[in-house]
Image (cartoon, rainbow, N blue to C red; front, side):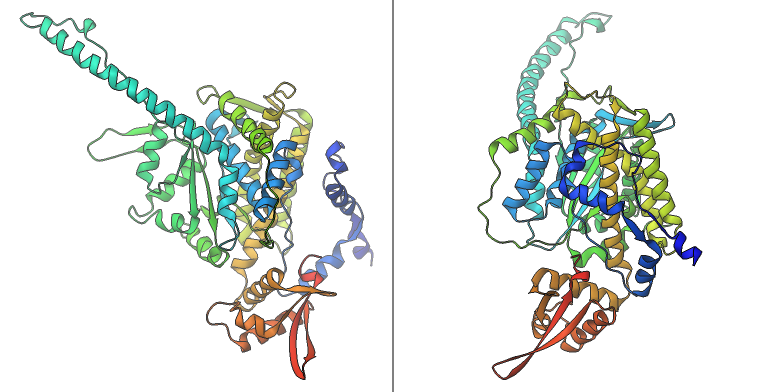
Length: 525
């Protein structure tokens, strides 16, 4: 009995953290209030262990941690597109990542520094507006790239004029030297330098093209993919593992050497590439499997941050985003892009309180991997998440600085920014667990999870949760073209056995109609 009582304790992840104004936000205040209440941890664990498949609670991206202008951009854009705000928020993080590039790093300790590059995937059904959401979030980069193209075209025209003059001067220099025994090389005309395009976004999937782009873009590049599965499956299509190893080195910002036939080796000392793309839910298992097919399970796919939000109804809406909101968001990204210099990057360091909060979260994350029942497949993911925390921190801090550069000191990260990063990384943990749940469950549980997701998306409101006719599940081909009524019934029984749903029998015009009711517990209500 004493052992059971010892499992009742106060839950307060950040109880030593100072209070901030953001805690007055109702949703966050409720969350913190919940964390500080008496919770019977043993009782919760026993209930979870009794379920043969677990339902991962889906949390929304904590957009209130962005600076206010960006929070408004994210929420307004999500409403205008009828999509989860997670799509926009993910795009904002990657957009800021590319704007920072090699222009800023954070020094965690003398022997450990991190940049801002991210590999990210957005998981959603086709037609869920993930591509428009990404494009809206990347608008500042597309505009910056367009300006860079205009500047490049101007420089290219100037180069052509200088090249013509150079060739005339070179020919004149050669004529003057005719008959002379000694060449005066110091008087030889200097060839003009070929201009380089400062590209920011690339959609070319070949490693050779990416290497060429990195050679002329020391700041870095964003690699954008409509579908990530093709990128992951195709990276070793021609070179048997070489591309994969390059992307592992690039993720760590380690130097890469380019060797090409008939040419001298070229070294890129600090390659910076962020990756963003979409994934269809049915393809999650394949992309995770493909991503883990590297030599000795190299952890390539574990380096990705995924977001897998619940779908929202794509109803018509007159909601829109004002030009002022979009312009202010673009101004913040431009402030980052034009203020930093990859030749002399800003070095960000923790203040004392910020370092304490960071180490608390770091140790708590490590502790999670040692708890009974923690999936072994997620241990490598958690190791990468510990390193990714500082990358998200750099991005969030630079957004905060760019929103108020006169007040915020750019070289010293504060405890508030660390706290925000802590919560954002806990969000990504929940998303990683959801991906794990989908990819690692047995076939019966995968079907149960898929049916639950279908009902959450298509079901009607019911006093106990959501409901849908059993025949509608069969007609909707929940499990693909091989769906049949026997499979539907078996899966419903599976969910009923977990006490997460029931069958109701109704009579309509003397006909018996069966409907499946999914309980509130299964939909996070």
